Length: 196
Image 1 (cartoon, helix red, strand yellow):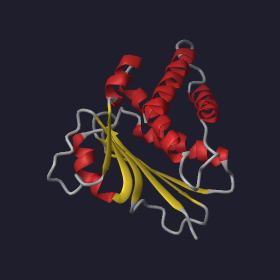
Image 2 (tube, helix red, strand yellow; image 1 turned 180 degrees about the horizontal axis):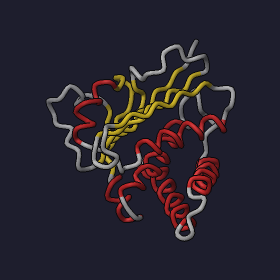
Image 3 (spheres, helix red, strand yellow; image 1 turned 90 degrees about the vertical axis):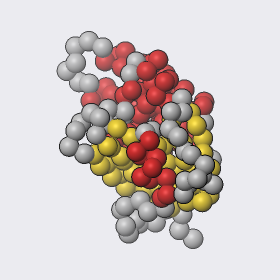
């Protein structure tokens, strides 16, 4: 029987939801090269402040349709993202929202499973909204490591290696601050892994 997992990170540009999807896809690919993984980013015209989302689809068979339709896990960091995407989450899926998002009691999603976390507050304590990306990455790895498809394949230590490598490559040429950015991202992923 085919197993397919769909994960969505959604919020505003500048919160790192595009990076979170990219890093999750890289982590899964390196954890099990036999799995099929599709990463799809999408963002508006504004780099910061506009809507942004990234989807990651993971399957043990070829992925015939590369768009997320029925989400197993969704990190919805803003009210507009929650209002727009909570309905795509399966009845047995999980919606993770930032603690300032109002899920309401009469919405189409009020009967679905929710986790409310202080993601943006924690990211700002670490160094800025952009660190929300590695907080939600840590939380997604912890959650997905318990699923049938990824059990015993994903680990925090492996994800830290991926993050270190990724940021070393993307920060090439930066004269100062690269090590600090890597350390803050490691701190953020550890935080996310613990809070879920």
